Image: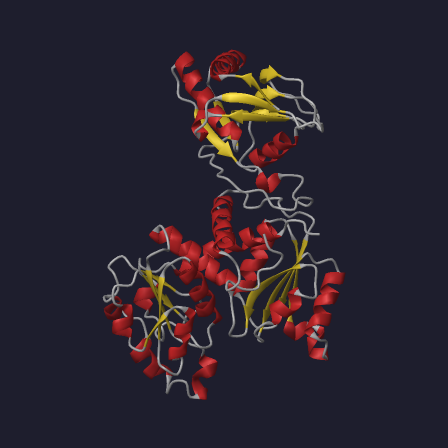
Length: 304
Length: 180
């Protein structure tokens, strides 16, 4: 296994399969009365978050605790970063305190990659800029496998602001590695045609893009981009690109609906869909815990 | 060099005897369940439960236990061990649990298995059944039921092959090649 998990792009299908297999064992652990194993007892994880995050940070923290790791959380607003310390210096200090795992979320793409070259600790990317969010793609793959029995041969639509989405990128890398057909759907400003170089198909209309897909993955529309001219208004965005019951009829009858959260009900996804039986959104959250445990367990081996 | 220590028939006879011993010691099968340790112990646990059913005409619950997360060498291994299925779909609290493994060696797997089991509940008693005891204990652990004691050196390895894995039933001792 590798030292770090910085992205899906450069890891093998075999490594991904081993994470997914191990995650199903951890999912069993999470169903027990005692949801904790001593696997990484005595090791330390530091969650270094330079961007706001509730769901991902909580998921990592709980995963760490259930592996018996000691956990420290550092948030950007309270760290020396506001005093001007460089990222690498922060990381070296964290390592000097004895961190075995550094989980990093950072607004600049490539930060985890930079860090992984400077520290001995295992670096796990919890989202870097518009680049990647590998554990999200792994938990999505786990959920798709669980619900649909496999990934190969499926048609999977990812809808929304693909351009700024690390979730969409990590998912595109992973799902194409496993032989799924990936369709990226959204307005041309947010889904430029040249994304097809990732080995995916680009659609600029919902009806065509959703036709006969097995999985619909909705992305959060990032409100902070609303005034940058990528789309006229949330109302208009919702009218063209929101997932409604009527639009979902284009997909296969047994298609599932996913969302990485946090969702804007009534904007990119209608409430009646989010709460329907087709929605696996809360399964994604539960599976995220098992998948993150698997990643840390597998990276936890000893290296030279 | 590889030497066959037990063949199919030998293993069959040994397991029959162990099944009888388990029933005798526990005065039947009431409150009894069997849990096999991944990988070798799981198939043996299944076989023992079948034999016990033949003797007592009672079904006995069988589980499987993977001990990867409880090993004491996780912090010194290069590659983490592959995790296999754990399935104990019944209550073990206040039950007598017979842990089953293929080879008893240092005793460390058994220690890990007992810790894993305790996370499922509080058994009334844990007993240990092993097909082979090869000595070299590093912890104060002994088996309640032993198929066969085999003197080995640490350098040798003992391989238990089972039909369930698509091989002919056999126990083999593999000695390291000596330099000529």
